Length: 169
Image (cartoon, rainbow, N blue to C red; front, side, top):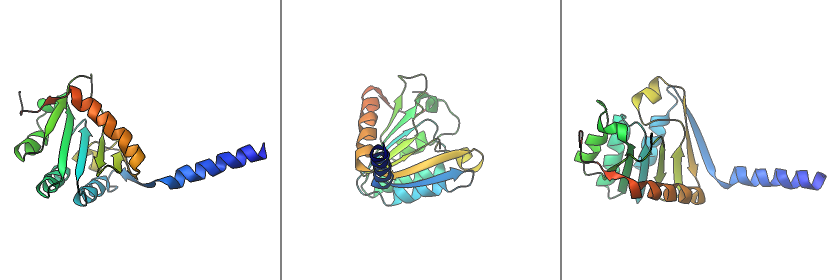
């Protein structure tokens, strides 16, 4: 029994140290700042799935990354087609490839995969309200194996998403 417990503890210790994990909480816990920082050091790719996207600093950081040659792909919930305040049009006009996932009642993912190894996920919507008003969390996980799983899921959703053509389209 002792050897089984020891093996389990050893396994949990390995799992806990296998990935570099940072956690942020809001309100005013630095979630937006952490996302903007990670986007600022992105080198090759950024995949984004967002339910609600009204954060100007995050949208600007995505556009800046795109201008540096980082390949950006964004999938948003269908509600972004009719929301008054959304960064979808800003991304579209800046040339950032953006799609709408209308297959589901709600496309409620809130993730970014950066450079095939960094995963940003949690309850945190990419909105000002999430940073300032809501009780939210954001995990920043440096783990290529986990990033691969999120990338595969992103590709699955991209396959049934529609290209975003602007509000009302």
